[in-house]
Image 1 (tube, rainbow, N blue to C red):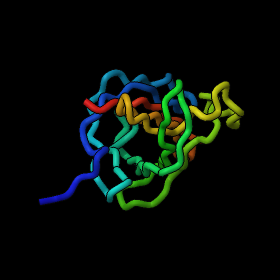
Image 2: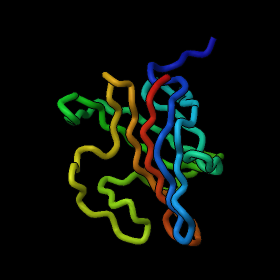
Image 3: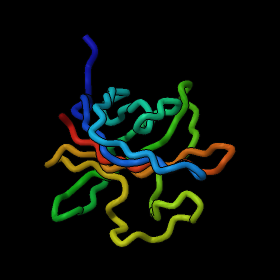
Amino acid sequence: MELKNQYDGNYICNGYRIRPGNPTESIVNNIEAFNTVNATTLLKSGFGDYFSYNIQIEVTTNTITVGGVSCFKVNATPVNASGTIVGAMFTTFTGDPLTPPAIPTNPTEINYYNPVTKTFVLNCYYVSGAGNRIMYEVDTLQ
């Protein structure tokens, strides 16, 4: 029997993906599987409807307060099918792939897991020939 970590499961995903020169691709109520890698790490397939890359999500023991709730910071790393890193997470975020990230209004509300709502908030990008592709998701356990 395969052991699963406490974050393993199906999540309802809402957010968007931005590709330069293309309309923003909305993600609305997609059901997406987060699968156990180890006790604190998950692998999530794709960015919304884009499945060429995955996101490796490590839940850390570091905490931040978001909306009055103590949340765990996460490391969210885009990887390809062989596990090679193809991007990174934003630590600051503008929502514009052509503009370098700037300090957001709420700088602590970038990449985290809320244990009360069982929700991940992920801000990542991956690199392609046409520039950075941005992904923003709010993933809530079903």
